[in-house]
Every structure is written in structure tokens, then in C-alpha cells.
Amino acid sequence: MSRLTVTTLQAMKLRGEKIACLTAYDASFAALLDGAGVEILLVGDSLGMVIQGRDTTLPVTLDEMIYHTRCVARGSHRALLMADMPFMADADPQQALQSAGRLMKEGGAQMIKLEGGANQLESVRRLAEQGIPVCAHLGLQPQSVHKLGGYKVQGRDIEAAARIRDDALALQQAGADMLLLECVPAALGAEISQKASIPVIGIGAGPGCDAQVLVLYDILGVTPGKRPRFSHDFVTDSGEGVSGIAGAVRRYVEAVKSGSFPADQHCF
Ligand code: KIV
Image (cartoon, rainbow, N blue to C red; front, side, top):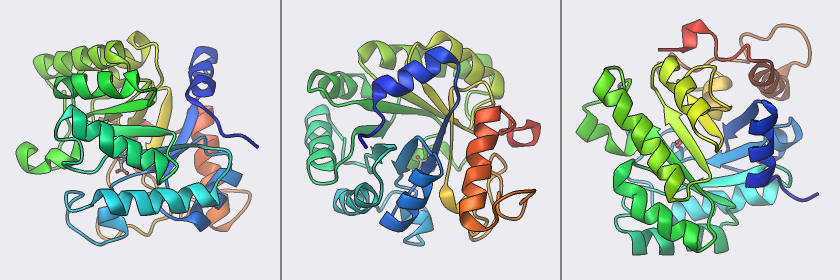
């Protein structure tokens, strides 16, 4: 079976069909998620924290991202495969192009996600010109955690919200095929999703986004320490139906599709 593509996901947005996305880091979980109907597998640099046990995503290298992307590619065959650009692998547009090329050629990624707003316009343009699908990650950008002073909700005041909205539309104009909004007020998530013609993935950005993503280990309840407020443990909250890990993933997909996730308690 051929994989879902940016055009498939674009058509889902037009039909008002919600898109389910989860992070994946290895072949076994990739196969399980793929079989459960997850439409986008994100090889996130969150692997630095949940796989490698680091405090932040900053130490993750391009070679490590390529290795995990290749593992996820081998385990899956349907979902669109998105890989994260690790910290400083896109310090300038030329480097971004080279790093994206490696993630695609060596890792098998179909789409590259990079963190940043207006500062990334030139890189997004260069990648788009080369036919590389890009997802631009706005709002809380974990690679800027030291500059932000922690993992905090972004876009709470009018000026900050306007900046995120303007950056989102400028990135779309520069050629981005998808946007990801992390930890922004639900009203801002809904507004950007309505204004943008490309799919908008939310994580802590409210139910108005076209797609939802969570870190796999958060929905499985195995996150060490405190789980983020925007997340949900679908294993403990098992309800009816299939049990175990596959059941939890199916419940997540169903909750995204029906719009019951995220609920009020997951929003800002
Ligand atoms: O690295 C990651 O997993 C991410 C998601 C949390 C959106 O960027």
C-alpha cells in the first residue's frame, strides 16, 4: 500500500475530517500505530527526552534522527512519515536543505518539521523549491526552552497571538505544507486553523485544529514524572473495547476523529 501524502491530508482538511498523529521512534510501535489508523507518524526530537532520558531535546543529533526515522519507515507502510529537524541542524537555509536531504534520502522521511517562525521563512522557501514538504512548528518551541525560560504556554496576550498568527500565514505563503501549534490558547489554534488553507496540527492548541498530535509515551502512561496537562493517558482511561496498547492507540484515534479529544481540561 502506498503512503498517505500531503495531498491526502489536505483533502481531509477540506472535508473537515480530523487527522490523527502520534510520535513514533521504532519499527514495532510504528507498525502498531500504522495498523491502528494513525495518519501521521512523527519521529520527534522528543526522543531525546523519552528514549534517551535527557532533560531537553537539544542534544539530539541529525544522525540519531536519521536512525530513528529509518526504523519507523521500516515498520510502517501507510502513515505519512514526518521527521523532526534537530536543534542547530537548520542554523541557516543551506544547512537546513542538506539536513532535510539526509532525513529524506537516508531516513525515508516524506516531510520535515522545523521549529521557528519568521526566522525560518528563507529555509522553508528553499526546502519548498526543492520539492521537500515542510511542517512549520510554532507556539512553544522546545528547542528554544532556555530562551523561553521553560515549557510555557505561548500567545496568551494580543501581541504575542498576532505574531504567531502572522508567522503562521507567512510560513504558509513561503511554501509550508503543514503547521504545528504547540501550547497556545484554544481560540488561537482555532483561528489559525480557519485562516490557513494547509492542515494545522495541534498539541495543547485546542479542538479547533485540523489534526492532533501527542507524544506516544504520554498516551501510554509511561512518561516518567508529570504528564503535560494537554496530554491524556488512554491506557488507564480504558473504557470499553480492545484492551492493552493497541486498544489505547485506537481509542486515541477515535477520540481525535470524533472531536472528543482534546476536551476542556486539555486546553489553555
Ligand atoms: O518532538 C516532538 O515529539 C514534537 C511533538 C511534541 C510535537 O515536536
